[in-house]
Length: 142
Image 1 (tube, rainbow, N blue to C red):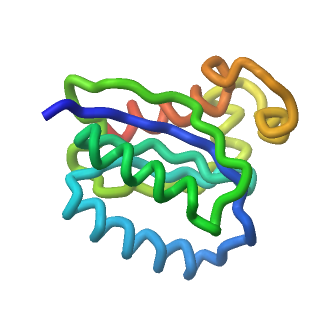
Image 2 (tube, rainbow, N blue to C red):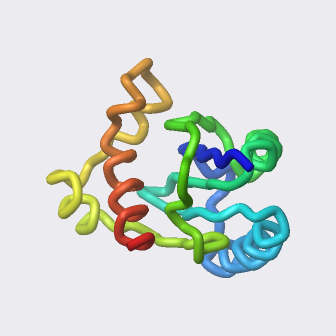
């Protein structure tokens, strides 16, 4: 069964409370277990950054569903591709709120210019937010 991953960034359509995020994660983790999807959701400077992986067909369906979810606006795919091995085999959906200090430790600066991703046509594949995301992928999957 071919594996696929997708990562994206989006704005919250309304600011979610910690409780609403916990409730959301409870639902998503249960659903992901049934679909054999694993990944991580980061909250960075008020934006969602998510990485999901699993069977290619399921990832396509879930990504389509996420893109229609009213909790997100300005959704942009950052990266996608095939996998030979899962990065998050033990995580139905890890979650981390990333603070500015952690961002600075990872990319050397606090401001990731997340607004620029949405306002300008930048080279998204080299955006610092991917550095932050993949740093957490490496940390949690090792």
